[in-house]
Length: 193
Ligand SMILES: O=P(O)(O)OC[C@H]1O[C@H](OP(=O)(O)OP(=O)(O)O)[C@H](O)[C@@H]1O
Ligand SMILES: O=c1cc[nH]c(=O)[nH]1
Image (cartoon, protein in one colour):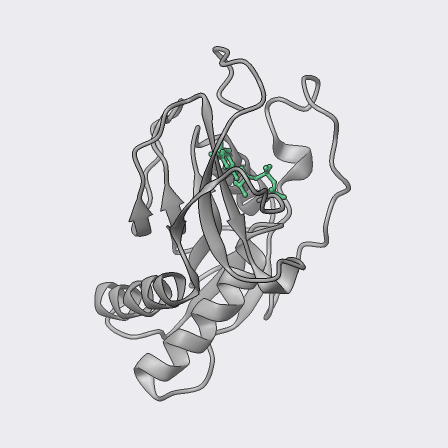
């Protein structure tokens, strides 16, 4: 996630993002045969508002109550802590507190190298043992560095490693929702981040 800049090419706008979340909600219901024992955990920052929107879409899809939504901070579980400035850790919130017996759907805006999700699995494992863990992302831009894949994808977006995908969401201060591709200002390196 980052703020939108003027140089990007918009790939998704507000209606497409909303439609993607509705489709993902239906896929979650179908795959889990309902939403019982489901827990959505958004990864800060972009994953948090997306998880909240997904909970609403799930409630709409099932006609039932909202699925619990929490947040999972992965900051201290990154494997590149020494290589990048440490961001301020956000709170981890697990509604209902226990993970045992529950299916956790991790929610993030972009899937790229997979290192954020690897860290998320470690962070989750330090809390408890979920029955199952699934992954929903708004954009999968490829270039994985780890054997990680998403169960639910809003948009598969082929990209060059020289580009950056920027997801802007109104909850995080953007004027409008969008997904855009920007030419990266950083030189391409072995390290995808
Ligand atoms: O698959 P990866 O290579 O790990 O990249 C994906 C992650 O990168 C971005 O997070 P970032 O750390 O930039 O923080 P942000 O969400 O606050 O922008 C994005 O929101 C994902 O969490
Ligand atoms: O392009 C990218 C890569 C990682 N995370 C993002 O938000 N965008």
